[in-house]
Amino acid sequence: MSSQTIVAMVTGASSGMGADFCRQLAGRCDRIIAVARRGDRLQALADELADQVEVYTVAADLNTVEGVTRALEALRQRGPLDYLVNNAGFSTYGLFADLDIQGQRDMVGLHVDATISLCRAAIPFMRERGGGHIINVSSIGAFLPGRGLAVYGATKAFLNFYSLALQAELEGTGIAVQALCPGYTHTEFHQALQGFDKGQVPAQMWMESAEVVAASLAALDSGKVLVVPGEGNLELARTGVRRQLEGL
Image (cartoon, helix red, strand yellow):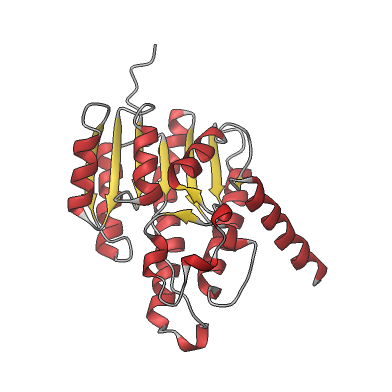
């Protein structure tokens, strides 16, 4: 039996899917490096999981150079990683030309720059260990370009393409890459979307955070890169792709 310490890093770990990834990875790991801005939330999660797994908390804003540096240092000191879950994210809501440009730049920085920085740091160690798992949390919005979410959807489309290409590059290394594309999910995510009314979305379109995370982990060894939990969401994604192809 291997004595290798199994380690995961989860970003955006203080709530929602990030916290549920930590909960569901607890049984698979010896240590979880939980990264988020809210240190008090991280400590509460560490206390909750103390009997199951060691949780090393990193209070860091991945939209800053300092925050990314702190996460990279934790990866080097507490890794190497077997699981990397790039979950941290947010969105604005509104017409692009009417929104403050800094918020749009911040989305690109968090969803794209932070993700590729952590992947670049983790992959050489995973390759040396003979395998690993990378989950980049994307969105069904990557397949459904629409009003009010231009930059958000574009960053998620990037994550899909990046994950597909990265998996092709890592073929034969034992590293599995996934782009998780959830639809509407009950988390704190939508509370920050000014002008967005959750009540306008039919109840049957919503999924629970723990349900989405379970679907992601179940699909890790399936060979699928793009994972869309929920049959209704999967059909929406397929419809979105067909409409884009019809425009060629």
